[in-house]
Image (cartoon, rainbow, N blue to C red):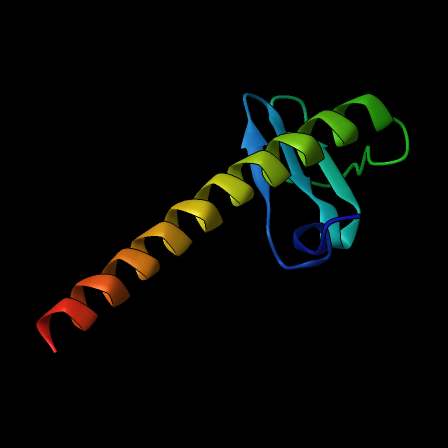
Amino acid sequence: KPEILDGNVAIRQNEWKLIPGRRELYNLREDIEEMVNLFDERPDKVEFLEAKLVKITTRVNDRNKRTSEGQLEEFAKIN
């Protein structure tokens, strides 16, 4: 299980909101106050949103790594 899923993050897609580190899933269209946790009842949504969160996080981390490496290379050229 990727580390990001244990952290303090959330993902929302349409009416669904997942907070994997707290094992919480809500349908905001039917439960705007987030009173009914559907995490155990909807493993399909949990799995889908977790995969999406991992994909997004991986892309952001890769982009940040490339940016950091590029900045270091530019700095080395200047000095």
